[in-house]
Image (tube, rainbow, N blue to C red; front, side):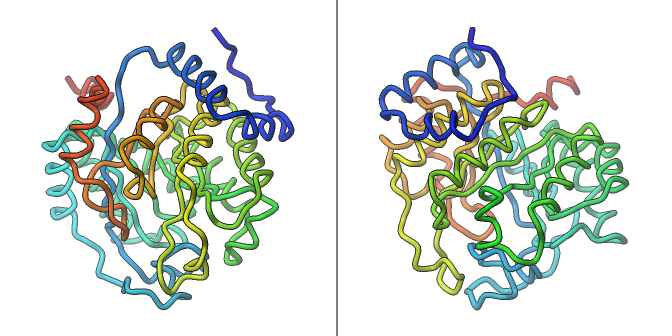
Amino acid sequence: MSEIRHDWTTAEILALLETPLLDLVHRAQTVHRQYNPKPEVQLATLLSVKTGGCLEDCGYCAQSVHHDTPVKAEPVMDVAAVLEKAAQAKAAGSSRFCMGWAWREIREGKAFEDMLAMVRGVRELGLEACVTAGMLNQPQAQRLAAAGLTAYNHNLDTGPEFYREIISTRTYGDRLQTLEHVRQSGVTLCTGGIIGLGETLGDRARMLEILATMQPHPESVPINALVAVAGTKLENNQKVDPLELVRMCAVARILMPKAKVRLSAGRESLNKEAQVLCFMAGANSIFYGEKLLTVGNNANEEDLALLAELGLSPLAPAAMEALA
């Protein structure tokens, strides 16, 4: 069995990214089968609890106040409405329910108390609970952990050298500090990135290096392809070649053998064959449901039919097993 390493270098990762695709996928599939022998894929549903009006200027995001996009600020959903959506997600086959707030950082007061109630409610349903709501401090991370939060999502987006080209309202260090607060609280990490921002292959390698040298590795690594939204700074970026997404999934699997490699934004534009290649490359989680925050996603029926055709089964939630 290949060893789990935390000392990967930029040069090694860049060499992987430049490996001939068939050789790369073969290596990734070998590693994947060693550490993930069951033919399972985790289905995660993502709900936008607070949409639009974010003070950050992330160049790709339709929810930023700095961009004139079709997405407008909406009121925060109430606890009952969110838990109803969670119950529907469970009935449809999801094992993880992810909740997003378009915030720069978690806000104290009623909004945070409601967030904690949502986390507790999702866990009581027997689902894993994930939150993404920007930066958070250590006491907030600890309170979320006490409420039963399974994972906190805070993506690195890209490599540290390219980061300032995409975002100016927070630093790379801010992102890493949030991840450290989450890790210290005992909540698992969900952190990955986006390709198609205008970055180089070296920038992709640097982002993967940051993730792969964490100890332990992030438990969940979302791999996103840019969905260019009209009105954002990146609206005219070229569409990502699907094989580049396959390549990123493969390298993430090799670097982080036990992580859930989640095929995330941009999957709607992939044909069936490209998705199959991503699964062969080691992707073992997808976002499941009609929407990813503000962009479209594949239909549930199509996803379930594809998994069945490939002989893959939805992963049962660890939360449900723990509550049984």
